[in-house]
Length: 254
Image 1 (cartoon, rainbow, N blue to C red):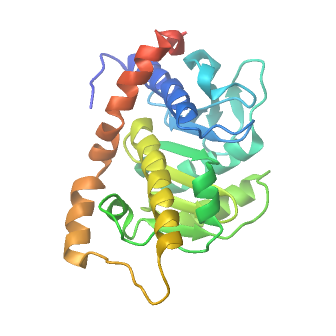
Image 2 (tube, rainbow, N blue to C red):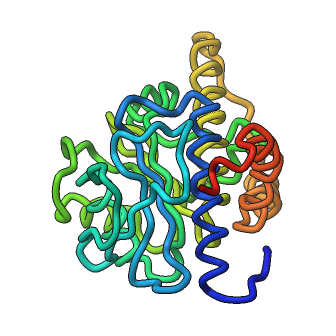
Image 3 (cartoon, rainbow, N blue to C red):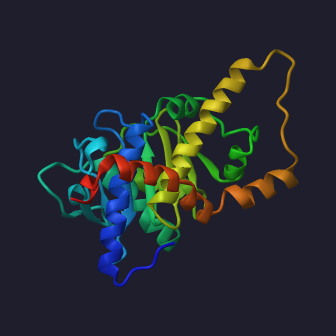
């Protein structure tokens, strides 16, 4: 993890990384109209967080586009000319409030694979090394309709609990939590999406009477220890950060 000369320098760096994350998610095909929102807790004032405005393209996101909101109630403190999605402020504020310092970044997007998987009413089977990172780290959240207020955000936060990294919002999509930084949360989202694709392919290929080959619990736990730590999640996005910085040519820093 990088170090910073001041909290203000850390804030700027992390806002720039959040802007890069939106661009990366767009490149993975996870931007859908005005849907989707990602945020990070502010290192200067942890009682606030930064989130994207509604209507700004993920592909063009800049750090100056981000809006600052209060954790307590989701109220917008600082924003530009674009509106802020009520579902973003209600969901993110209540998870940050409920989790405290164990949540420092959140990613929620509507990718086709995660939407399809969320309709099955189950969690990932441990059919791959990557899936092991989410062993006992997934929670099902029954569909509660479109999110417009803090009550629905609080319901999601309560079901997510104090430690889970993935909320499967049924008939909706996935929400990923990062305890360290936005890079970690973004990797859980991207990697979980890949696992959902693998699960859907395996489900389609499974013939009547067949069963999955699943690793022993000892091997699952060992794989989770290596692949599922916050530090590994943060580091796993490094190659995509490198690539997106090349494509951005500094535009995300504006």
